[in-house]
Length: 224
Image 1 (cartoon, rainbow, N blue to C red):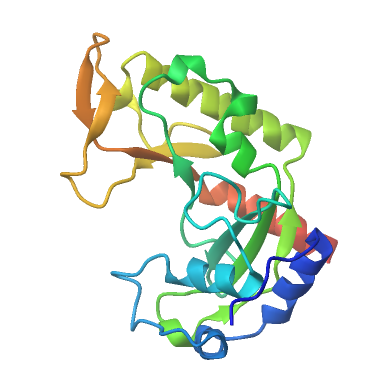
Image 2 (cartoon, rainbow, N blue to C red; image 1 turned 90 degrees about the vertical axis):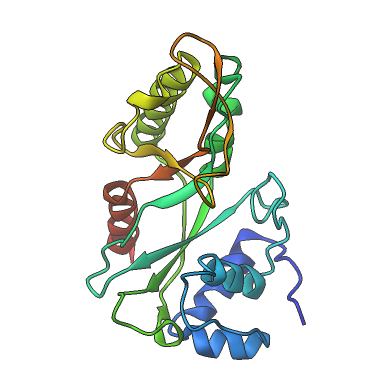
């Protein structure tokens, strides 16, 4: 049976802490869900399992995973030393109309105002079912982190608005980067070309850099 949404952030955190130490096989069995052999075709499986276990209700809607609490859920694959293994997807980037958005109204800002991070021990030599869930924690960006996120977002959005899509590299941004986000090279969307003309391009997504999520994880660990 699917758990009902938690009534408070305290209840959400309590539920998340109860998952600590469980393997993905154990969690899938408890939820009566099938676990694939690997994540090559089912990359979102781990996040979906944890969403189900915690009672997330947003689904694919454009709102935080726990809309009544305004809390977003992010799983964080880490190695045995606690280092994040990959950048963290935030949301799809608007490829047109970028000049009309303000940071405060952006989906990136809204998604990252309050996040429940759930680390998962996911070194590539560990079979999927044996990967273990770590201790979750709630995070809100401090003023410095907020400023860094806003600066990166504004710079990247300016490049999109001015037709500079081809100039954007993964190295852009101190904490936030823009990367292709598409199922395949044929999944194109409308974007702005160098001369302001409409062009077809791969969709882009905003991602948090591993150096930033590592800092977030270290801050949380130091408070324990």
